[in-house]
Length: 308
Image (cartoon, rainbow, N blue to C red; front, side, top):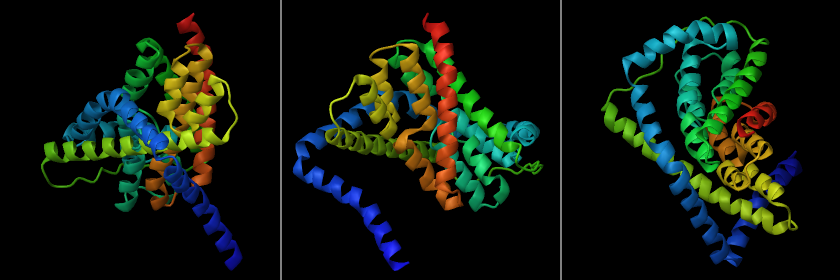
């Protein structure tokens, strides 16, 4: 048992040590990668996501949001087998995108407002991108907002379809819990939380952008398609940017797969919250992969109609 723990510790530390060594050996190269990642975040993600993060955070503090969630509770309970409180988290994820849904799941878990048996289903349901990223960032990269809406529809259909199937294995959740509210200045709290969230997203994008460069440095030269795939599996924004350089139904489908799966950058952001709530990483990753594949297949045929 000791040897097994030691091997696990070495296996965990090895990629970290390799990354540190590469940064020390080529600080200019990977420092530029960090700057490229920050630039990508500042140009593509920040203008589209930050205002919506703030407005969404503010909206969820209004009584109207709680009333709307209560109205939707029966639908979420019957279709997805999650409670009304879980429906709030899913709705919030639909509006805001990663990793807001995962953070909401953790908050509900910590406050005892969701049951253990619905936790995994809720984690998979409240794991979506938002309209501003898919339409404002990805759609703009393809110079086609209409394609962005098609990709968003395929993304939601895939996430909801897999979550619907998962719900068939769960019991009906009739509890219509309420979102936990905290006292304070709603305007300031919304601004503070949205600023912290968007800065964390920027830091993650910059780091994983550099990590993708490290991985590519160990691989032989490859086609733009496979290079975009590698980049996207590490950081979805970089992958979508690479695929949008050659618009086609296949490139749109790959972007839809990457955004739905999330890439390591988004997955790590989500798991940082979900594992604290007791969600096991491997089943969650499997479900996200299935959702991504379904979204990609749907998008391939739908994009073919939109792009001609």
